[in-house]
Amino acid sequence: MDPVRVIEIKKSVFESNDRDADALRKELKNKGIFLLNLMSSPGSGKTTTLIRTINLIKDRVRVAVMEADIDSDVDAIKIKEATGIQSIQLHTGGMCHLDAEMTRQGLEGLEGLDGTDLVILENVGNLVCPAEFDTGSSANAMILSVPEGHDKPLKYPLMFSVCELVLVNKTDVMPYFDFDLDKCTEYVHMRNPRAQVIPICAKTGEGVEKFARWLLEKVSSAKQ
Amino acid sequence: MDPVRVIEIKKSVFESNDRDADALRKELKNKGIFLLNLMSSPGSGKTTTLIRTINLIKDRVRVAVMEADIDSDVDAIKIKEATGIQSIQLHTGGMCHLDAEMTRQGLEGLEGLDGTDLVILENVGNLVCPAEFDTGSSANAMILSVPEGHDKPLKYPLMFSVCELVLVNKTDVMPYFDFDLDKCTEYVHMRNPRAQVIPICAKTGEGVEKFARWLLEKVSSAKQ
Image (cartoon, rainbow over all chains, first blue to last red; front, side, top):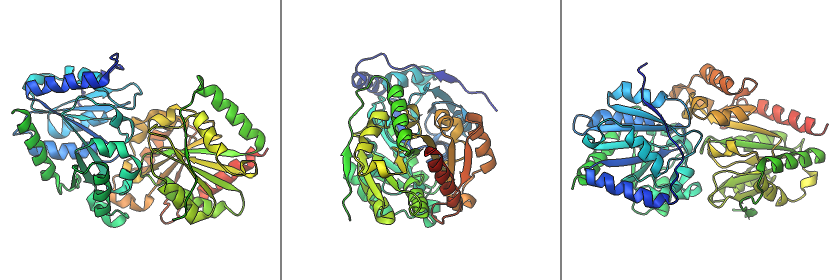
């Protein structure tokens, strides 16, 4: 397997994460870079979704991915092998989330950041803590997979409040699970009335073009 | 729906969680009560597994359940309605885990604790933080569901290190997912060579008797 760059990120020394996040967001905006913070439970299909999506858009925009995990570099390698784009691994050293300073350390580990249009941060698989820390991203999105159940917005309110996009993944196994997409959408909107819900199946590719279009529009608006 | 008791638990004021956890474990042992701390990702099937299992053992041992969630009381109500046993909801107020003092607050909210043989704590759905805090439980177990993937022990090492039992749930959907049980078991044993792996399907009941027997043995040994 191809080696990928692995960065051991340190805990933030900044007192105010919110202030640092705002500063990072502004810097990225000035450079015309769109940073997406993608969150989810473990095993919801973040990496598979990214591979499908990046292969649809990589000829039109320059994309890089930062894979955050407590340990291992399997995801960064998968992305690199399956898409050919720049993919680096961030090791959080046991931390359950990323904050803005940790995200900045990741961005500094990317080669040629200034020529990049879109950076996707795959946050640590966790529906709780990542929602509490502003990474400085341009937007937050999350993936809820069908096997997890449609009641998750009831149990993890903050996660669904901070995301402007919810991808409902693994729609191919809908017949085998008691998952109600209408109820799910209703619960998502209880937490964030403006959140967009896009059902996808990363495995078969269904619905992924819609997410790709959403990303391209965001990248385009980051340049304005 | 039947109302259930909801306890708003406060963050621990104790400096040393480990010390408090050891004290709680000793107290429970003296009372002959077995406390199981059950952890997993969101949506892995903790509640469904508990309902199946409790219905198999409730005539032989006196069981109570503490459902921890950031918000909502749907799980405590589900358990109560489906099993008839005592079930209470612990609200963590945004906290991503339970520590020993928070667990103690939950136990104090149970009626007739001293006559109880087995208390099951369903921890917050999260593969990261709950593993870092000793709850004072007699044992830790976790559920990994098939849709999450067999690589999770590589990415969440601590969780798999601290658990003596790993239930692999949703085996009925194995044909639809790329899940390798042998690899999973191998990865689990990388983290904890003595961990037991039991495949189950909480939906159909397959394998659940094995978990029930494990629990009954633990309850019996807590009395010795």
